[in-house]
Amino acid sequence: MVTQSIAGPAIGVRGLEKSYGKLEVLRGVDFDVARGSIFALLGSNGAGKTTTVRILATLLKADAGTATVHGFDVATQPANVRESISLTGQFAAVDEILSGRENLVLVARLRHLEDPGAIADDLLRRFSLTDAGARKVSTYSGGMRRRLDIAMSLIGNPSVIFLDEPTTGLDPEARIEVWDAVKDLADQGTTVLLTTQYLDEAEQLADRIAILHQGRIIVNGRLAELKQLFPPAKVEYVEKQPTLEEIFLAVIGGGDTSDATGTPSGGRR
Image 1 (tube, rainbow, N blue to C red):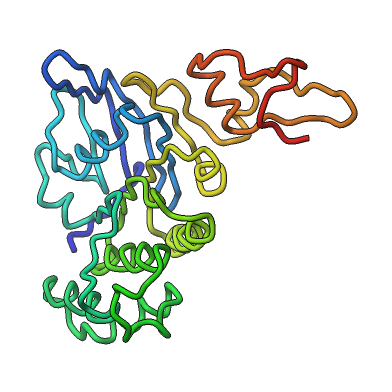
Image 2: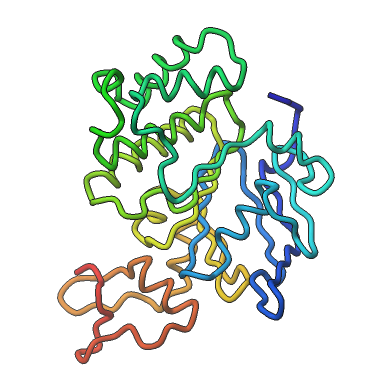
């Protein structure tokens, strides 16, 4: 892996634009991601989350703007960017015929790394898959497959990992398993850019949250800062705090989130 000392953010994006014909997907996106943090890019379907990730991963060229990943420019230094990152898409890219350990060993060999078996065993341990390592992936639960997929993404020790809606289609228990794995990544010093449309996922995981709406970042901050954008809590019998879902809908102009009694729906009492 190519390494270099970087003083700035792990990811820096300025004025990113992308259109498909007359459809403007990104209209001047700006954000930074601190090293070793989890950054959630939150937005509805079609907001431009995956397009942003594909540009940062050098799979798509921007029409305008600049972006750097691990200090490398995605437009002029794509090879260096690719050696610094890993990308996990919306669906687990694992071979169901092979065992979990065989999947990991295969990727390590493809990367020409020394001692693929030791690398596989270490990742199985890190992701609590040691007992299932010899089993075919076809017998794994959804959460186990996703954890294996993320483990495969870490082979080669990438500095930055992109997780594009990693819990799509998973049940609640499997989602929690993946959340724990993502938290562990940040604890180990990996920078994580997470795209999601699940508001509770961003609330649980992210150090910072950016809301992408109609091709622009309209809010970017810590959860506590985002909560300050919401009207003060109403006090009836107990103080009520807004949920991230209420903040999201209020910020993007999603309409009145109150029910007939004047209490925001979906809130915590």
